[in-house]
Length: 357
Ligand code: DNO
Image (cartoon, helix red, strand yellow):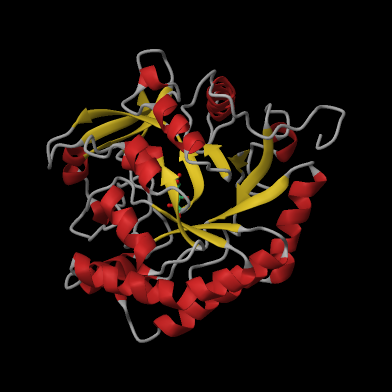
């Protein structure tokens, strides 16, 4: 396994020089964040990303994400053009030597939280979500934190309208169509795709969400039966629903896990309509995810890909990008390294001053 950390590019206050000092981190997870869904990524910009990582002694291990245009999710006639643009970006990512690409198929919003700075009893701050708070929010006043900005009011209304008729089974059809189109290109380019589960893993705001459980991920990998059609096992996204048995999911997807996000969440409400959780420190005791059992499942099923700690709390006075400060993610990485070492299969490690450092 390779330990990686997400990096948001040259304006990220968490610099590559700092990332390389976290023990065990050998690669980064990055993207061309300024590129809009449906654009073909310019090869020279991807090369610059790889070169920046390598100049800091790190590899560009994962692209997270190439966004999927809404027209593809909606099955609109323009989807061919946008799926082909996605496929072309895949080829170009492979061209710089990066072999893992994460994406998601969530309508309109990516991960969603209702509070980006919930104080925890130890004085740290974390991201939180509650169905009840979401129901009270005024979308028109753009109150919802954590969602992709960049929509105008009209665009948002148009998208909600367009999704009104899209039942989950239609969204599955659109996802199948997309995979049939892009997986052969990924195969040829030697890239593994890893779909990111929906976060939180249930429908919100009346929009359909389908990548929400173990059975859904198993259905996904069967849509196109290729090692290039894989998943991103995100313990935090799936872990918000108590019915998701994460170690069992990890085992059932053996061989098809392209990438792993390991973080912990504490579930504080499990009833439909009153579901709630907040993000927690990575160790098992702080949340509802059995992190050790997940790591054991990954090791026992031979997973050997990139892993990253995910959303950290803001601690020690840091005011990081929500979920993506330095300190708590570094602690998360160290914890995950310890878990794996204790289970007898350490992460690949650069030796300071030696090979790989
Ligand atoms: C949240 C992330 C997600 C993820 C995308 C992948 O912090 O896990 O934004 O990058 O959903 O497409």
